[in-house]
Image 1: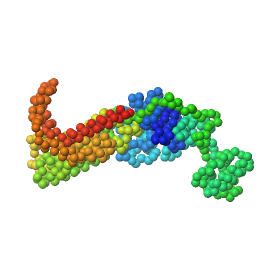
Image 2 (image 1 turned 90 degrees about the vertical axis):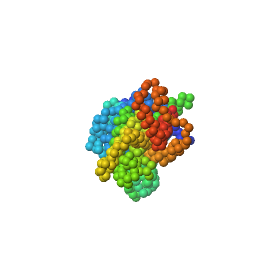
Image 3 (image 1 turned 90 degrees about the horizontal axis):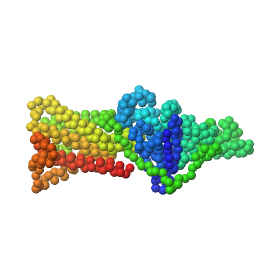
Image 4 (image 1 turned 180 degrees about the vertical axis):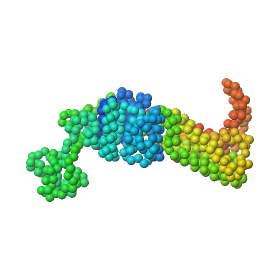
Length: 577
């Protein structure tokens, strides 16, 4: 059962709240429609229930508020608007990525494709889906965790009558299995046709909470819709004849030459228009809504006294989204589910190979720089820049296409998700660094012969420095995009390291120093409670030498600042919420 008690949204400035003291229940095994005209507060009420917006009140899902449910995706399935996914990702890839986020087996994705009728479209891109297919995919995403409750915001918007019938049949089947279904709609005829219970809102307040039979009897009645260029004249003629015949007929002129007549028939209106020479462009029978403010005659309208200010409902705090239950698997599927990663790596390898050949041809470039494809005029080699772009996209795509926010709001800032992103981007950066050197060596061997390729004496130190540069750039882009919530900020942070930070570090190292770090490994061994092996001297000196380089020091400084900024924003969000 879904219970909403005292839901009240936070008003903006001097405007009234979008939802005002809303209380109702959506029982299990039944379909409940939240009915209201556009702007009545339906979406705001759903967002308050899901703790996406701040306000007051409480919403219980089988007796527990959402923030106290360990795995919300297994209790509540949510569809708010379109599917928030990368347009280049496939339908199957989107669902498999969400399976990792919900902690469900990957086979659940194919099962849901069968349920929603998209089994043959698993390889289709999200950007090519029609409105109907997008709604089907959204329902599949909501059903991945096999939830008890479905919360849907106008799921039939833009659907054809056939797709609409299929949608409500699926919702009816979910309710028949004991689940709870709550969906918002602005169409009273749709609510009367598909729901078991109708909760009506007007200006954010509860107007009526009725069984569908009572709703259809008290809120819907037949009417005649007429469209004519002489609407005012026809309305006057029909009203005059109704008074003369002492018949209860209600005539309501509307915009664009439309007249709505209650208490009459198409035949009577057509005869009246013919007798008085009024041309008619449209004449049709309809089922009309009496309006949310009209009280039902049987007293089923939900009039309740205003809430006592001394007993305010508890506050609702908008909480950030939970991270994926399987963050490493989620991040791998997110990164490899689109062609962007492959295209970036392929472009970097092609550019690096071409630069390696050109640098070796001049003869003035050392072999390590030629293999890394790093000419003096470039602030960073293509491999480091490509790794930084991949890192920036890792968090940038989360904010641009928030797949994890489909039912929970903002992109999560969890340590597990951050560690998964750091691991995956580091793996891509190391792979890119290794492939760049291998491809460069093979190109030089092919163009100039094997005698050009020689292993330098300090190959280990050079390799460690090269790996640290690419991984550091990847992490700098990742953390900057996570802090500033945009991909461009991550790329700017990567470029700022050689352009801005390195010159500052060079000035620091160029200044005269009165102290030396000579003997650092021995002093570290003395401070350690365990006995370091003698080989550790070489490792510690290699690390110190690497950090002492301007680029290494600049990367270390930048990463430290970005880590602190990321942790600060994460902790501030937890304290605020």
